[in-house]
Amino acid sequence: MSWLNPSLKSPTEIEGLGRRWKEHPNLRIRSFLSENHVLSLWTELSHRALHFHTTTPGNFRYQYWADAVHIDNEQNPVVASFARWLYTDALSWISQWSEQALTPPEDRQFLTTLFTQGCYLDPHNDADGKRAIAFVLGLTRERWKEEEGGCLTFLEADDTNVSLVERRPPGWNTLDLFSVHNRTYLHEVQLLRTDRKRRAMAGWFYLPP
Amino acid sequence: MNAFSFLEFPAIHPQILSSPLATWPKESKSMYLDEILCPGLPAELYHSLKELPVQPTYYDEGPAVGMSWRCSFQVPPKPDPQHAESLYRLHRFLDQDLPLMVRALTGQKLKSTEPGNIHLVILRKGSFLQLQGIGPTHWGFLVSLTPGEWPISWGGQIICDEVVHSPGWNRLHLFQDDCSLSVLHKHVEVLLVMGWLEMEP
Image (cartoon, rainbow over all chains, first blue to last red):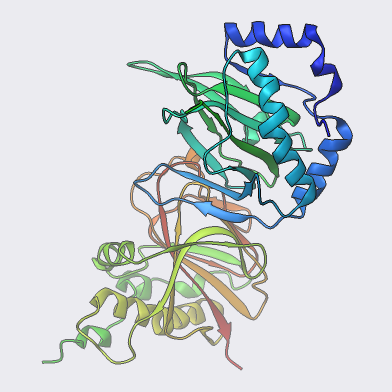
C-alpha cells in the first residue's frame, strides 16, 4: 500500500524537492500522505494511551506525552502499516531526491508524540554522528496563534547571539525534514501555553553503517 | 530543657496576630497576606523543602488539575530530632495557627482537611494548576516560598478571584472560589505548600 500523496511521485516534484534540499536541507512538505490514509492514522493515534515524559533540572529539558512505535512489532494495524511503509518505500523516496543513503534506526523505533498545555522541547540539534535526517509528521488538526506556542522553531547561534530563523506552526499532514548530520539545525518546540493538542510522529533516518 | 519547646509558640508571624484581622471583609472569597510565617522560618523551610523528592504529577480531574511536581508527607507524630525543626513548625502552622487565623478572619470554625499532611508543590517550566471545587464549606490555601523578583513574563502567577499575583516570599493565599496557577515559561521554580481547610461540623 502506498501512503504517499500521488502528486509527490511526479518527476517534477521529485526534482523540485531535490533542488530545495540541495540549497537548504531543511524543508516542510505539505500534503505528504493521501488524505484518507492520514485520517486513518490520526484516528488510531488519537485513541492511543501515551506516557507523560518530563526531565529534572540539570538535564536536557523537555515535557510531552509520547509512546514508542516499534516498526516490526506495532499492535495498532494502521500505525503498523504506516511504520513499515515509512522505513521502506518512504525512506527510498527521500533517499532518491536527497541523494543521501538512509537506513532505519537500529532500535527499529520512532515516537508518536502529543504536546498539551505546558509541554515543550528545549533547543537541541539531534546530532549523534549516526542520524542523517530528522522527520516530524504533523498530525495536528487545530490551528492557533503563534503566541500560544507549540511551533517547531529553528534557531541560529553565534558567539554573541541566538536568533530565530524560522517558526513552523503545528501542521496537518506535513512532513518536516532536516539534516542532523553534516549540517545541523538547532531547534525546539516552544512551550505550549494554552489548552491545545499538538500531535506528531517523529524520529530519524540514519546513515548506513 | 525540652528541645521541642519551639512548638509551644505559634509559627505564624507575630505581626499577623497583632494586626486588625477583624477588619477584613467577611464576604471576601480570597485574600493574601505577606510575612505570614515567623522570621527565619521561611528560609529554613525553603532549604528543607527543596531537598524533598518531588515527583512529576499530571491530573486531568480532581481538586488540583494540571501538571506540577509534588511531594506529600507527614512529620512523625512525636517530636523526633532527626527531622528538621522547620517541618514541625510548618505542621503546627497548618494544623493549628492557620485554622485559628482564618477563623478570626471569617468567623468560621475550621480545621485542616488532612491533619498532619503536608503537600509540597513545585512549579517548573511547563507546570500549571487549576484548583477547583473549593465550595462554601472549604478554604484552599497556598503558602508561597518563592524568593526573588518575579517578572510577569515568566508566568507561574497565582490567580484568585481574578486578581493576579506573582509568586512571593512568605506569602499566604487563601481562596474559596477557583484559583489557578498560570503556565510557567522559564526554567525557574515556584515553591508552594498547598492545602485545604474545612468547616467543623
